[in-house]
Image 1 (cartoon, one colour):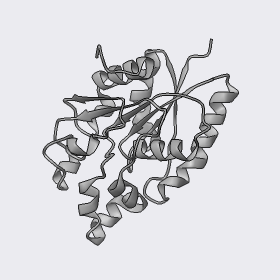
Image 2 (cartoon, rainbow, N blue to C red):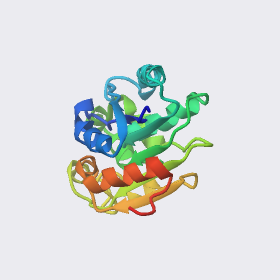
Image 3 (cartoon, rainbow, N blue to C red):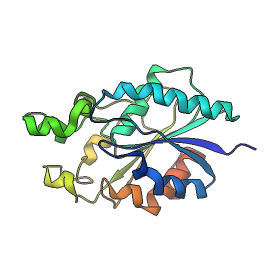
Length: 209
């Protein structure tokens, strides 16, 4: 029997290898993970769509009838835009890790000067605009509450994970949402976050986390 398939996307400026510990832990929970890296700084976010098409084709070629998704920060926004652009994709749940659905105030602030624009690169407009969960998809949000790290030093909100404010992780179309005491980057190394993601991917709820 083919295990549940999960495609995992990193956030802004992170290589695919940054998701390797998270993917290994999620695999121990019974999922088969495929990391989808993309050039977040050089290329517009939609340039990742062709790579995601290949990942989905690999899943279906291996016999998978569903495809689940996990996206960290910008990676989550890319997943939502991709699913909206590909409504005929196989079914599957989505877990977002600190993605600014309501738009990132930090990205907007950085975009006001040349140095800041260089930091966010080609993803600036998507980070500022956010994204909405597509219809007929169960989408869960894991939001961090420990405001530490590089994002905080750059002016990120103290009410959130240091980079993304808690208010930016809300959307009425979310199926579920949970707050955990982790930072924006630290959530990728948290066993509690992996457990919460595994529960939602399996059940479509964070109950029991």
